[in-house]
Image 1 (cartoon, rainbow, N blue to C red):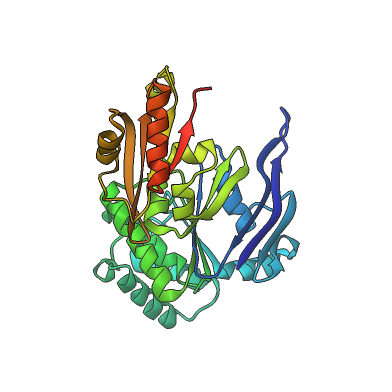
Image 2 (cartoon, rainbow, N blue to C red; image 1 turned 90 degrees about the vertical axis):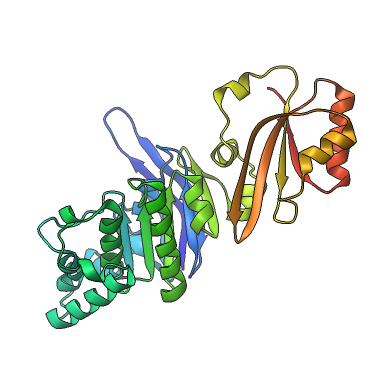
Length: 331
């Protein structure tokens, strides 16, 4: 288990201090696939580097299996890091080593005998579906294949935790999907806890069971992915879940109603029934449906009618049918 207690990271510059991470407390349970999401500059990468103490927190504690990593000596920390592996957006493979030798590299560092390291590297390459590429160099592999080698290398020391810092950002959508499925399979088969750092909500939806949303170095909300998706509390979470075009914010004459439907109502003709029963046409501004935990959940953003009576009929309809919604009035 990883537990962050009031973790803060401040960088000192001659032009003023930069508070990259501010008083963050999170608990990541064994077996979680935990997403940490936010826009660029939110503090995600700094936070993940605090988790393995590549960046030591300015204050607070990073507890791994009850041990505060920030309190360890350098040699103790290096030993503890064998249980915390990391994969990156840029793959970071050694260009003059084959796929097999890249996977062997961390085992060489910790002194595992060569024959044993090669045997294990072959098993890991098979796990990531690259057993026929063991003699290929990184330049001979596609981006997705390079990331699979990086994943195999990260698993070479039998880690308990796998940190993924924007690991799919450089990949196309189909390759991203296959890499995320691979990570999900590794989590299930090997019991490895995975922390996913990303700016893409679709990554969180596809793979994570829990999520924390960062903004300006703060966690603005956290919880199970489905709960955050169905009922986002922060503006940044709403924007990440159902991005709004700039023009939507310029629509005048009433507010907006965000209708949320869960797996039970996702395939019901909610808007059609609402329009017929309320005798009020509605303007759909945005809509999206996702599959989370095997269920279809979604959101529809409609423009509130300018007529107060018509808006009241819509709200009454939603209430009477137990459909979750939120009225977003213009500022």
